[in-house]
Length: 364
Image (tube, rainbow, N blue to C red; front, side, top):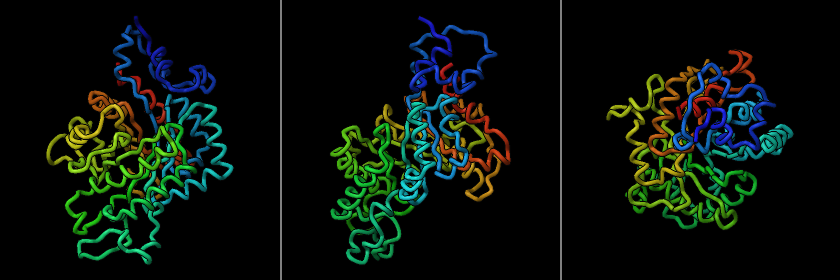
């Protein structure tokens, strides 16, 4: 049995119907229009199918109001909303007219919605420190501080975090059942006598294991991300993940001028071996890569005004093949600050369509 790339798109697009693409205009398959037809086995193409093909945006990025349509045209499955410090800011956006309109259009287009958030400051409110400092981490000087994260050996802290995670999940319910309630961004964990023997990634996993159990009591589909990123990039060894915790691997310090496959040396920041070590702990079938290929904010060093994205299609496709070879089927990227101002300054972001098309080309 054989299949054209267009037929492959029909099988893997993940939208309500393939006819949607025609209604929305040229989609990713148009980038292959100049290619001569090739016969390719469905079995081989399916081996490269990515179940999640997403982008991660902040609420202000919806100043580019047709993001849902752009995602659908590109053959993407998922839009995720992000905020660097405040889940409440995402809730406020969703309650606005613009947020409600975005949700309605995503629902109509068959585009999934998720929420990827550094949530700890709201899951464990800092004002609780005055009542019970033991909920919070101990710094390297031996002092309890309310700056970031928590003490994972405080059973009460874990209870409060889980209770607030369930409340937040009632307002931010992903259509996929996948939750992303991350710890504070790149921040240190606890150094109390009970915690200091655990790495940052192990302490994060203690919290995640507790939270996912609470989430599953109200959402039987619930799974929760373990974010391997910056100080939690190295895999946990002393703490085992709950079966409903999946890996989310975010190599923020990697290079983007060469393929990730070429970043395997000991000197490579966030090099490929870190992913391989994590995949020895977490199942590859559910693992997700959170990339930065389209992240205008990162390449602008998080300073406004955003610079022009240094998009490299060939490196992106090489990276996809590297991930696919490891059995990863869930891939997304930040696309922060690809907004109305970006389009006004630099013109149409054709890289969004090329990004969607790359998932098809990676299977060639």
